[in-house]
Image (cartoon, rainbow, N blue to C red; front, side, top):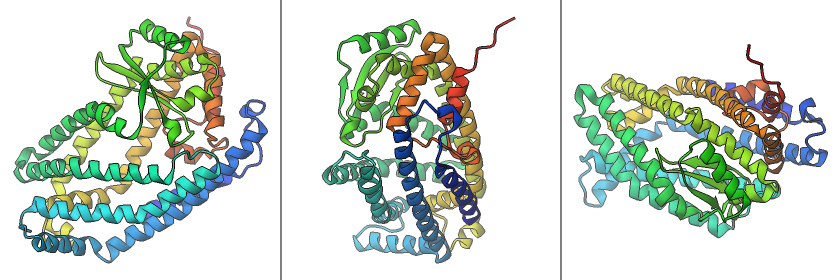
Length: 412
């Protein structure tokens, strides 16, 4: 953990140096205004300073938890709590739920100051935060309630599967998580997301007609077209699509519509998103996640019965949830390596989706839309190549514009 922190802090320092550069990259000269550049630079440096502090405090707390064996101590205390309320602490499910409840409370308490500062100081200072303190805490309470409702049955199922799984444990765990992911992908936009945001149909008009015409030309099974009130919380903008098979939906942030006055720019952004669908990027990403999930569970089955591993972390028993936590700690370097590889693939997908929109005739509109999003979101204009390669799932604007401007190769 500490070695990974040192490495990532080195990358952060490289990025911080790039953010301090007083001039725009050559590709963006004459494209991004000087005023927007200065605002973007100030915003990025503010976030960078905050990130350094947050990461330092996080590594201190995580290291202290391991070094002082807080986890085994808290596991025992959670068992005492179960007994205190008149329940059976030998029941691993009850013991685990008490443990996770305490962990959730601890996480909320320790993360709250950083969340408040990020939202009401950093984001507000640069004009992005639009939510009130009441809305902030209301969202937090809703999130906790959802965790209390959804967490226990999921955790209970995982414990039972591990206890009864036998030689096919990895397959059973993967199958459960696969089904769970499908269920959550179905329920989230219908039941969960509306708890936090208001989704309304995009009004009839030229923009709606253009998007529907584009979707129809690509045989995209568009069923619903929504606008989400992202402006109630932030002035950042975005667009996304979701849904299975013949039931696809597209969601536009109201801030995107406000910022992009030209409908063609919005349609070009949607063309990019539809490019991901047409080129099967979503399916490939989903398959990759499933393979990695299965491999992780396979690795977990190899170490879950290692008593010496549990003992090295201070445990004299081998609870299922603790085994999963320990396993996650031990494969941190591998997880970062996999994340880096997935980012490389994701960046390749972004270039392909841009090229797809370009082939549809949206090159200039997409270019203008990407520049507008970069300006309005005050995204970093100067990026360190090492940092962006390691962290960014999307290529920097400079690279995307260069790719869009590059002449298409003529076929022989």
